[in-house]
Image 1 (tube, rainbow, N blue to C red):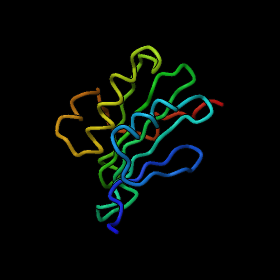
Image 2 (tube, rainbow, N blue to C red):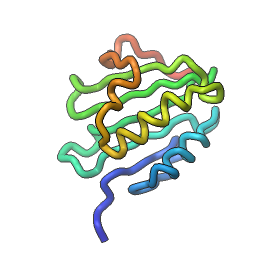
Image 3 (tube, helix red, strand yellow):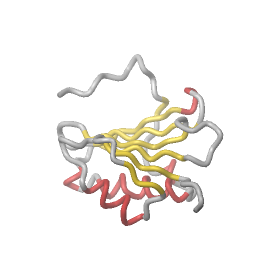
Image 4 (cartoon, helix red, strand yellow):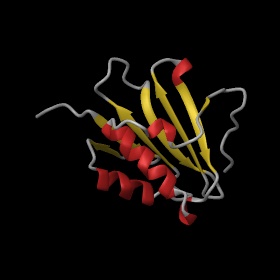
Amino acid sequence: MAEARLRVTDETGETWDDPSERQIQRLYAALNLRCRFLVLERLDVPEVGQHYLQVALNDDLTVVVEYREGGSHTHYRAEVSLPSDRGGEELVVPVLLDWAARREGWRHELPWVRWDPKNERPRES
């Protein structure tokens, strides 16, 4: 059996190895205010844990998307101000699927800025 190349983890800690595009879409659609985030992690790169794309729902169902491809200098974020239940998923899902499949162009779909810990705020409960 081949080793997994991609792992998706949700906020509860449940994981899916090498999920299909349909599974990724379903996992994203299942996000809610009790299970707010998904992390897609590449397992087939030298620095496991440093190559990921994650999405998190805010209280108003807008989404923050982050990716990292190695060290801290390759950590970026984008905010999708359109709530997920009002069309925001149409912006986020293609990025998830293209990133997971290593298709070109996903970086051009959202307005990415370098992640800066000084500007981040903890999620409100």
